[in-house]
Length: 320
Ligand code: UT7
Image 1: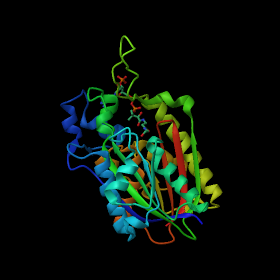
Image 2: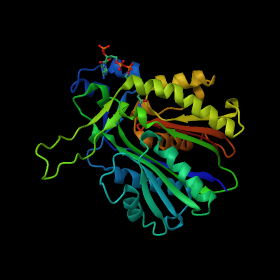
Image 3: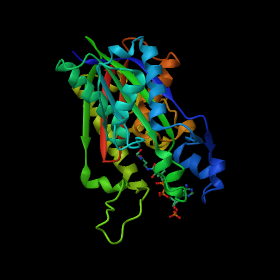
């Protein structure tokens, strides 16, 4: 039996930083950021951590789903910005929630992390290995930015989204996912370099670099293709989809996908204006927003799609 989303949650840091404030940090303008990306403000951690955001988003999702921590038998966290190398963010969430019956682990699929997590949970359920899963996308990307680099620091934000999924008769209709490591250097962030006592000149830690145009072109080509394939596998027409919940990287990417799918832009909800790109957190946080706005009714068909570093991508058709 497939996985069905039965509850959602999200959490953002308290502090917001506007485009205007960034004008004081790098050579940029509110007008450039707004017109090229659609972003106006973003949340930045000053006290919160990836884990604390993830735990709050998870609690909200559990409350929304009406389940208790002991019901959860699988916790998957999509993140590229965990607070620790180990233990995983998922294990830290397990500890914070007292979800003693769960198996917990992280996955690194960047902005497609939630979609990859959903795929894994669905397969755990289909194979009988799990019944109730918590899938989280949580990021503190602010710690991975070069705050002197206008090409990246204006784009990203911090935040988390979560969903509780449960084995059900209906739910996930189809999932498509893929990756292209050959083009992976278009979006990179170095982790700890090898810097042991046996090396003469250690390397400096580096921050996030992006070849924005390459990633843009990849997104506007691959995302519609992945969605079309997912629709085909689900034997569903695009016209029958109520909402397309896309990873929130750039409003122009969302508009281009809507155009390619020949669907009205109203079917593509967004939250990037207020939170920027929060990588793995963006799809579940946006899903939580429209869920709490009461826009989703049982039986609605929706599409989720994520894409980003790796390069990675995923698209799913599901019944709410
Ligand atoms: O979540 C992972 C997936 N990520 C994405 O999907 C991001 C995909 N890429 C994009 O969204 C866009 O490529 C960006 C928003 C990153 C950049 O927009 P663009 O329209 O592709 O701009 P560009 O990189 O071609 O840069 C145009 C100009 C350049 O100046 P010159 O060379 O024309 O003089 C940049 O140096 O804009 C300049 N620029 C800026 N100017 C003011 C770049 N960043 C800024 C900035 N403020 N923050």
